[in-house]
Length: 622
Image (tube, rainbow, N blue to C red):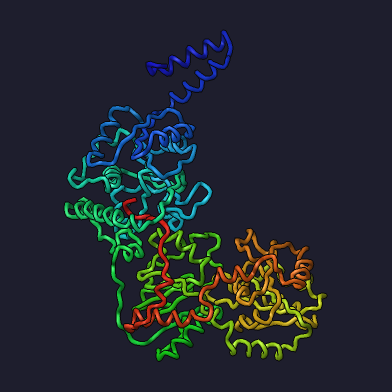
C-alpha cells in the first residue's frame, strides 16, 4: 500500500481475511485501501489557516486528498502549476476562506467526473451565499435554472457572457473542479506584473477557465459566508475593482476576449454610490405614467398620482406595459422599464415572492430601474441582506419611503368611503369578517361560509380582480362565478363586493380578515385588524408572524376567540410599525424624490431613507 500497489494489496488483504478473518485493524486497512484506490484529488487552499485546512480535511468523506496551502501573490499561476505537477493527482479543486463546504462535495464531484465524457475538462457547481449553514439568502443560478445545465460550454464563453452582463456565472474558485492533467498545458494569459494580491485568485481562475470545456452543475456544495460591509473596507473594495479592470482590459486589448463589458462590470450600483459616484439628475418634462394591469395595482398607485397632480404633473394611467413614458412608475411582477426615460419600481404586493424570501430580487430583477421604493423596515432588512447581488440594485438607490396606500389611513376621504359602504350594504351586525383570498379554487369560499355563517357577524366576500391576460385568469374567474351562483342571496348576513372595487375601505370597516396567503392580511395591519389563514387553502406554512394560522375545522373557534380580544397576542401594532414606514408622509416623500431627480428639486429629506448594503458585494472578481 505504501508503494501504491493497490491491486496487489487488495489481493493479499482478501487472502488474509479468508484464512484469518477480520479484526479492527484489518477493517481499518480495508477502509484505507478503499479510499486510496480512489483517484487522488489535490486541494489548493488559498489564504487559509492551518486550522481551517485541517477542519476541511476532517469533514470531507473522500479521503484520498492532498491539501496544499498557498498565499495570493503575483506568482499564483506558476505556483499552482508546480503543485499540480508534483502531486500527480487526477483532479484539482480549491479551498478559500469564509466558505462552508458540504461533507460529500469531493466524493460527488469525483463520481461525476468519472462518468463524464472524456472531453469534459471541469465542472462549475452552484454556490450559495449566506451568514451560516442555516442562514442562506442567495444562490448563483436561481434565475438561470435549466438554461446552462447539461450543456458543454467553453470557459471563454462563460467569461464573456459574465462580463457583458456584469453577472458572475462562474462563482469562485471554490465552485471549480477540474482534471489535473489539463492545468500544466495552460498557457498563462496574464503577465505577472498585472497580478497582485487583490486580483490573484480571479487571474488564476480565468487562466484555468479560459481554455477549458466546462459543464455547469445546478447543485450547490459551497456556502460563501458574507462579510459585513464596513466603511473602512470601501478603499479595499475600490482597489479590488480597479485591479480586476486591469486584467479585463488586458484580455480585451490582446484579443483574448471578444466582449463588450457591462457598464458596471459586476459591481452593484449602490456600491458605486458609496465609492463616491454622483447621482444622475436629468431634467425631464413633468409627465408621469402609472402602469397598472389590474384594479389592485391601480389602487396601489392612485395616492401617488393624486400627489403628483397636486404638484402640477401631467398624470396618466396606462395598462399597455410597452407604452413609452417620460417618468414611468411600475408595480408589476413583469415590466419593461426601458420604455421610460426615468423609471421607478414599487412592490406589486406586500408579500410577493415569499417563496424566495429574503431574496425576492433573484426572480424579479430591479437593476433596470432608476429608483426602487420599499414599504417599511421589514422589507428594508431583506433588501440589505440581498443588495450584495447586482440585480437588487437600482441605478439611483432603493428607499424605504413607505406604502402609498398607508397615507390613506387617516384620510377623511377614506372614512367617508367606509361610511358609504356601511350604508350601501345595510350591515346586519356590529362585527364584520372579510373573506379575501388570493385565489378562489377547490371550494374555499364554501369552507368559509359553512364555518361562519351562523355567527352573528357580517360576512363580506371580495375576490381579486384578475387580468384576462394571465394564464389561469379564466379558471379563477369561473370558480368565483360558480361560488357566487351557489351562495348569493342564500344567507342574510352574506355580502358580495365586486372584484374591481377598492378593498381598502372594506378592510377598514372589518374586524377580522380570512384568507389563504393574500397580502390583504398585511394591509390589514395598517388598521390593526387581525387575520386568519386557513392551512388547507395553501400548500406551505406562511412566513408571516402576524397572521393566525389554523385548519378549516378550527376556523370557527379561532374567529370567535379573536373577535373577543382582537388577537392581541400577535402584537399587531408592533408588526404594523415594522412593516410600514412614514405612514402619512409616503406620497410627499415620493414626489420630493421624483422632483429632485427629474425637476432639479431641492428637497432632500428622502435621502435619510436611502438603504445601504449590509455585506460586501458579490462581484465578478469574488
